[in-house]
Length: 287
Image 1 (tube, helix red, strand yellow):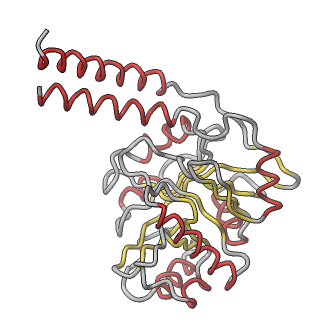
Image 2 (image 1 turned 180 degrees about the horizontal axis):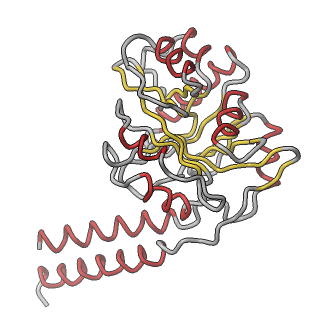
């Protein structure tokens, strides 16, 4: 067999393997109820999700189905300076056995990106962080610093004192940025002890929903209950490596309360399926 022919066979096998692994990983797991921890329910959330129509690949309804597969109880639709997908999310019913889908926006400015959760209408990106936070709070929403690296000059002490949360766990490949997220969170905590640690996937179009997530300690399973917990800082963030961030007592309660399989057990399989499929397809096209 010639080398090109062997290459085509290997590419076809890779594509077939990717489809097979993806099909297996696509089976929705049994829905687990929120876990009780003292007076609180612990909900698993991803507050940084992009949707269609907009800068994401899936509609809010399809994302809710993916949230079930990822073992998530809450997602927030947060497109860049867009609100159409969030309006569609607002029309979804809050079924007892379905994840909550909260309307939001990623307020996008050259000096900062700010996640707004719990909005009724879009927020202008004009002005400083404090101006955007004020507009978010006027609607009863929550403001979260999105992937706050040092390149975002808008996150000065005044801004970090005003926000409700900051992404400390984000699927970032560069270790430099991971350290910057942690440093920003530590700065924010010194300025405001109640700032919420947040873990988010920043999902657009890859199978990474819930790869990093936030455990939220709520008094009731509702959108209002989620927002109240965020404002109070009752959260624990977890990155894709399993490292948790937050109040040590809450971190301990997450470890004790959540059974195995609460995180996205099929996430690594889905990512492997994508890699295999694209490698196989690329190989067939090239060879």
